[in-house]
Image 1 (cartoon, one colour):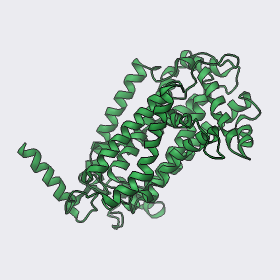
Image 2: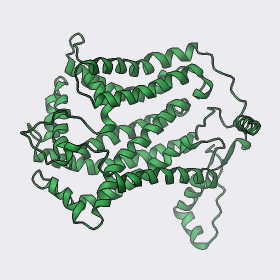
Image 3: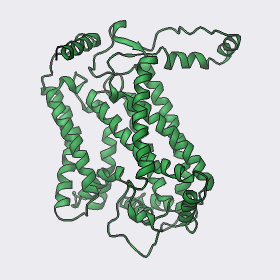
Image 4: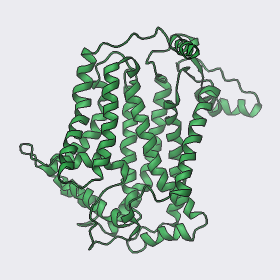
Length: 421
């Protein structure tokens, strides 16, 4: 899909001059105007564009907020309050940035879910998937660093608890913790380190996103049928067909975000984080932001020793493994058919996996006691079973439905069915 020669023709003298020296207009034209995409893309494929818009928004608002923020344990909390109350439109910047982080994760979870459902990680898109997982990892690191910056109660104690888990790692654990903290406890050096990393990582993320988009343009876009493009009738130009759909999806997403910014600006935050950090007063339940709760539940689910591995190290390993397993999904799934649309059993297990992810998020917000621990262990077991057992085995034994001969056939068949209804 990406190997066709360029059809760009400069129309003015300036365009011809620039095209001969640095062909940026040609690159934009080939990549975002006439770039061919499958004609059957649905709204699940708009989350890539949504994520791009959210990344730009987060970087721009973050840069402006950094101009007013004071990375000092005495001044940090009040500097955030000053931004909201005294800086012109500071409240808008603050709430757009904080709520934008939550919506960034909503979009990325939907994007990952779409990839798992339609098999967007299968050959030849393995590297595209790995780059996407790298983006996810960078997002998580950036968000964790940013959560500490308001210097509220949950910021302080969240940083204390999470960095303490690094000490479970043999040999290098204590060194990693001291490197992050800048000492032996969460204090001013910690806040300065997290501020510096929170400012730096989004630009690294932007670089990997550029590689992700580049890889996408090399191998071409997957589609809901999982069938490769076979003729010109299977594709349409990116503009206006895909851009109009992306623009509509982005508009709806931004309108929902705007509702939270203007009417529920603090709804997605923890109440304890609107109290200044106090090292002498521990909150009743220390929890991270909602988008980390599934992984927090996995971390707390390991309450037993596994041979020489104690429960603390086991929890840390399980949490990191829950992210690392995403990187090897292309090699775990043995099915020849990409899309879950034609895999009835995989579709069932996928939706159970999605429900299990939501369940893990709820369990992560509950106290680590009683029945919640047992439920967390069962949900964690299914999380890993889905990747390590179900994906490899199901691909070998499942009998998929008949695939359409082409994307066009699938589109026309769908249109005919809807017309008869």
